[in-house]
Length: 106
Image (tube, rainbow, N blue to C red; front, side, top):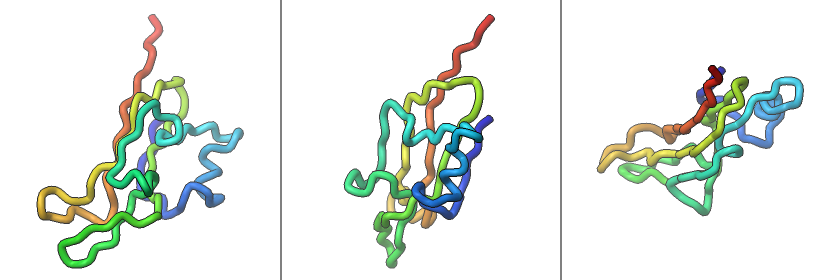
């Protein structure tokens, strides 16, 4: 099971902690990733930007997630992508992606 989306809650909030509680067992891919990439390493979990004209500045909010459950995947990487493409600001959210590797048993 893979759950993605804008959860409107930072990691330390109860809403997000419910996903990773021992009763739910979801794995949050940023935390589990072997490698991580983000637009601003000084604010590594930021998935939100403040837009001012043609500028998009990372803020400290982390609202966008990828959770996995079951199948015991290896989380190879998690990337928080730039909010801009060239001179165009795509969104006030950064897109997120993860590379997962599953072991298929025959």
